[in-house]
Image: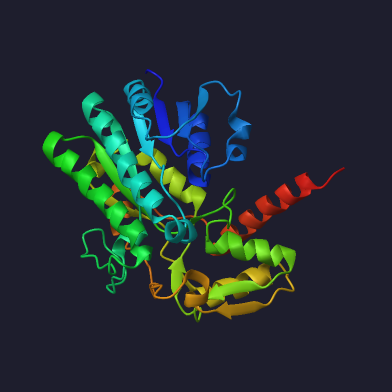
Length: 330
C-alpha cells in the first residue's frame, strides 16, 4: 500500500503539531506549512530530521506554493487560522482575510486535484445560540457586525458554507470539524486561552484572572483525544460532506475551573474577577454555555473522549514546568 502523504496547514500550532506527530507515528509522510505567526517552531523541533517530515515556513495565502503542496499530497488538514479572542479583537482585518482567503485557496486546489480535505472550524460558529447542547444542524445566532468579537465566528461559518458548496457541486471529499476548547501540552495563554493562562498563573503563584462573573461554562477536551479523531475522520466515507462536533461534553464553570487548577497544583494563587469591558473593551459579548452534542461523532467515529479535566490540567502543567526547567541555566 502506498505511503500516505499528509499536508497540514498551520501545523506549527499546538493542535497541528500533535497531529503531525501522530500521523508520522502512523507511518505517513507529513508536510507542515506554517508562517509561524501564531504557531511556534518549538512545537515541531522534535520532528525535524525524522524520515518523512518536512516543514515549510510560508503562508497558505501563497497560492502557487499551496497549489504545489496540495498537488503532491494525499490528505490535506487545513488548520491555519487566526486564533484567540485577543488577536481577533485587535486585528479584525487580519482575522477575516487569513481565515477566508486561506480556506478559499485550499478548497480550490483540493477541488482541482481531488484531494481529501479536512477544514478545522470552531464552536464559535454557534454564536449566541441558547439550545444546549449544540447540534451540527442547529440554527446559529451571532451578534451585530459592529461587534468585532463576532468576526471570527462569521468568517469560520463562511468557510463552512464554501466547503459544503464544493461538496455539493463537485463532491469534493471534505469534512468540517467544529472544535470545542481543545487544550493540552504545547498550548500557551498568549492569545487568551483560559486553561493555559490559568495554569501558568497558578504555577507562578499569581492571581487567576476570571473575566465576568465566572458563571459561564465551557467544555475542555484533551488535544490527544481530538487528534485521534482528526487522524481518522478523512478515512471514513460517512464523514464526507458533513459538519462534525469534536470536543468534550464535561461542562465546568470558569470559577470552578480556576478553583480546580489551584487545588490540583497546590498553588497559593487567588482568583480575581475583572469585568469583560475592562479586559476586552466596551460592548464585548460572551456566551453563558457552550456544550457540544456528540451523537454524530459517536455514530460516525466511535468517538468518546478518554481524558478528563484533571488529566488535561496535569498534562499541561507538566509541559509548562518542563519548559520552565529547560530555561533555567545549569
